[in-house]
Image 1 (cartoon, helix red, strand yellow):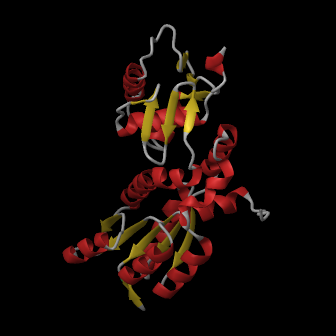
Image 2 (image 1 turned 120 degrees about the vertical axis):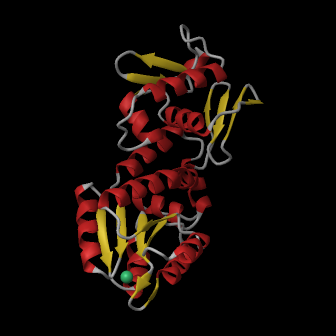
Image 3 (image 1 turned 90 degrees about the vertical axis):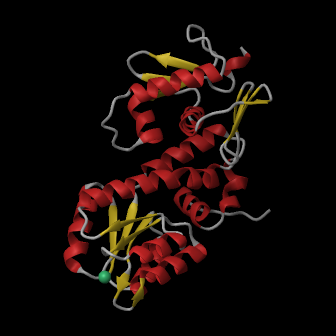
Length: 278
Ligand code: CA
């Protein structure tokens, strides 16, 4: 067997952008490795490539993204965009449609040949057909000029969030198991005692998140941030509703839970794989 020496970051990037199966040899069947791996990736700063030739649009947008904690790279032409996209492997591309040396479509198409990088198109008002074509090309969303930086940042967050499970399944690969409960992130399936459990999308994501760090306490804030939104200003009742429905589906008695333990005033803890045997 060939010895591959790569850093975690390099491996994560390779796995998310080029080859979904690339991580399979690595973290399969080792929940501890998968958990620390996941945390490392989550802490990594997200980098946005802004492709826009109009400085009056580009600069305030780049400044606003930086203020929000994103890493920002700038390209003013299609050529620069392709060069930077290949070299820096951004987490998301904000892509103007009308560039001096070509069309944003071509950039989008070219990027998509080799990577699944999320793309948000920046279009001018009245480019109705253009928008459709943009989405057909595989752009994840679009915003119409003139836009506010706040609006674009909200879209960026939403698209990054949506693309997360896709990236995560490529990264993690393997199923998670705690006692008779088995969750397969890649197939989005969950089984208890060999019987499939029907879970809503958010219930599934919550369960997967809890099982990734099985055995350790995860705060309410962290769960809300990871499963719902990086900046959730709403009520945390949503979390309780989902925990409650998840418990029902897992056949839990909240007073004597097998899997999902409430840690008062802090958050929740999922039983570690070895915990159920004793
Ligand atoms: Ca332009």
